[in-house]
Length: 450
Ligand code: ATP
Ligand code: MG
Image (tube, rainbow, N blue to C red):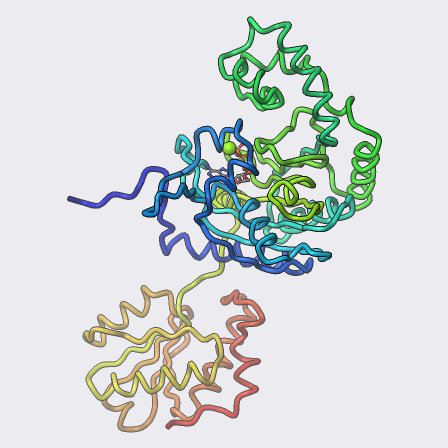
């Protein structure tokens, strides 16, 4: 039997993982530059956690969760989203007792959906949550933070939609008027909507059925039902976004698929990825911590789909820096191999962040040089019997037509560091400053052979 991957679950191959890591690193750096700290929570949680938080009458809980009984007959679920687990962790560890928390996490999520481009059964999210902040300042900052990420990643074609769901009371009143409206046209509703009419009428607005759109367009508008405080909150948020130069459109039909939201909800979407256009979405969930048994704690957060983010990054012409080694060590013969090990370890110690690939598995001089070239390395370091005897190495630039130089081993680290620096200045190398081999090498006392 030939093993197969599970439908909708993907491998991220080495040719793609560099781009993933590049994008994830930028996102993480932006998030942490706003004072958020990482939390890591389990992939498996009690099923009840998601039922209670996401809501019974939602696509996720009704038909998308990976739920099973563990060996102790307890119902567990592979997390379909991260907020519930983060709130559960915060309550478990007393993180919300008179404290405010700015947290982020990242990792795989699981939903049993119909797999298609941009929609998978295992997908990845980066998730940011601010607990203990009533807003609207934090609402604005979370949106500004996401806009900064687009800027740092060089993304375009993203638009922001904004809405306010008001308070519980707003939702109750609005719900009533929706039920009245849709009941009067019940014969025109599709099957899904009829079911939702009784259980969760707001979700009718979420319908993607084209035949429903006209009815939905004429439905009552949530914003007309906002309580004064929520209306004030929404106005202040818009003022802050205007001042920050963030453009948005208010979409009164944006209700979001999860039950726990109130007041601010938003979604960043693109037209560059076909129909799976939502990249980053979030909202306020002031009631959730209390609902799950914690102290009443206002909170807001967003989640971003990494597959879609990476897709948009590539669509916008983004490219991760080259991941090839700096140096490929060509070592022909046993004595040269021993010397190769020694040199590679010494160089790793002398030049922080340097990437060295030592030829493994032997081979002729010619075949090793071929591998060196294929590896993408900038330099081949050539070791044969002569070099070993003379304590020297041949330094052969692979990406320019400069000649091979013979370098004494005691000067090798300084020579190499200098050359890598020059390449970097000329744009051959794109590594970030914290991996800069030269500045680190300068701090070292120099290369000495053991
Ligand atoms: P959609 O309307 O596309 O189903 P959603 O409202 O279900 O999205 P959220 O629960 O808000 O999505 O998750 C936040 C983000 O996670 C989405 O904006 C999207 O980028 C990503 N995402 C959600 N579901 C998937 C999936 N099945 N595959 C890939 N990415 C996903
Ligand atoms: Mg969905």
